[in-house]
Image 1: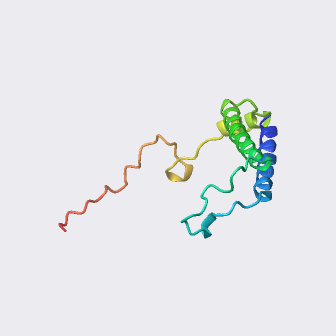
Image 2: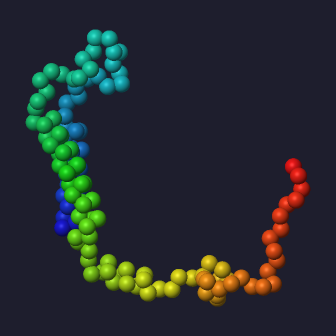
Length: 122
């Protein structure tokens, strides 16, 4: 289901890009002088392309939230995902000291020098 939703989202994004590119420019933009220009585009622009753009935008938001919900709930976890998680759980983690030769909770060697502190005043 997750794969289907992602493919559907990609198709809707492509359709939205086409809807935006096909629309007539309504004037304005960065080239307008400001005084006396119509800031909100041409009047009565309730055409199919504009309404379609808003519908596709709403669909993108809804499908994106649905994908997030499905992915968090783990509704579409494949068998390969659980096998991979089992392998990760079984592998031993290397020790941060001694290049993995000593266990992580082993004490430090006795002959290691004590840390020196700088006693000079600045």
